[in-house]
Image (cartoon, rainbow, N blue to C red; front, side):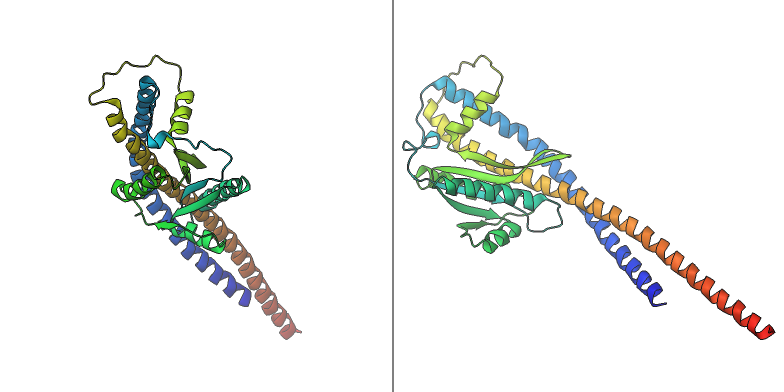
Length: 296
């Protein structure tokens, strides 16, 4: 009897958990669909402005700009800014773990080369992880669940100003890159200096004839506007991709949890039915035994 009660309690608990995971799955699905529209809408703009700036810089020729600089002394120790984007909540599968493992590997690689890394962390999960690792956090960046450009712009401007002032030799972002609804990849991407980023962009493009530009105002004035905007949009796109990846991975995780709860309910129901049938059979056997004893 005690075994039957425990099975009933476990089945009830699993059913309650299933209701929670199903609700979380539906919420994550709604948020993912909304975030997907933003990611799909902003990514072409981010890619196009980077392509345009790369083509513009190539057509101008040798151009000098603080955001395009490279360290002249490769032997000296460098100070690198790393922006790590994680979530405030868990239950999103391997989302936070993948991003933090990528960031930790990048930090170890830079420290092995003698460089120092300043951490800018978004999300409670990332803050808790680095606090547990006893790594100092330069700044905790607060961003809403649906990142707005104005929120991201403040952090981007700070990183740009620090880079231009010579405080940092490079700026990187660790985030979950949203490739498609079925593919998300933890990435550590460089956003500054732009010389290397634009060079990689140009190398990845198909060979094509450069357009001939007529500048008004002069090229330097245009680059003064376009280059910082390229950095801001790249960081903003990282936040959008991270948010979209978080929602889709939570949706998948909660669907898996709901399916597992369904299987557990079926298994527990089967065990309960077998135990109940065994109990009934035992009781009938005892009754029949008693009847036969009375006849004797």
